[in-house]
Image (tube, rainbow, N blue to C red):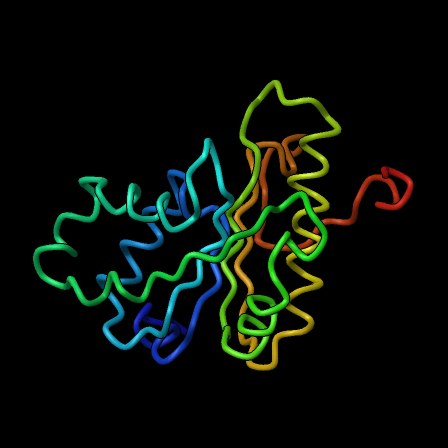
Length: 179
């Protein structure tokens, strides 16, 4: 059964991690351009280099990728709501207010935040990519309207396989043993 993007996301609010990264920026543009009646897109953005999440969002929106939205659908950009947080902290480092807001409003989660440094320290990569994803799943369990979770994996997922299918593979060791 084929789905159109507009049908799946219509009337839904989205929680997006990794929205300031390469893929996340494209996801934002695609959703705002293609789905007129999408709800808000709540973006987890960490404060960085003295800039608040709001300032980082405004900088992001200056990217040439968003020119056609600025020109043809400027109101759509107002659907982007920055949420201060950090993947490597409990409750994603979000305020109680923001956690409640997401739990009551979001129906689709797109998790694309990860460290993509190929030489990252294993401890940091694990904290960000594995425990961060676990924190996202814990949050999703609290979301009253959740319909879908989309997880974008890093280059290292299933890298030991010559082919990767759309299925869940059993881990080579129990996850708790890994930690």
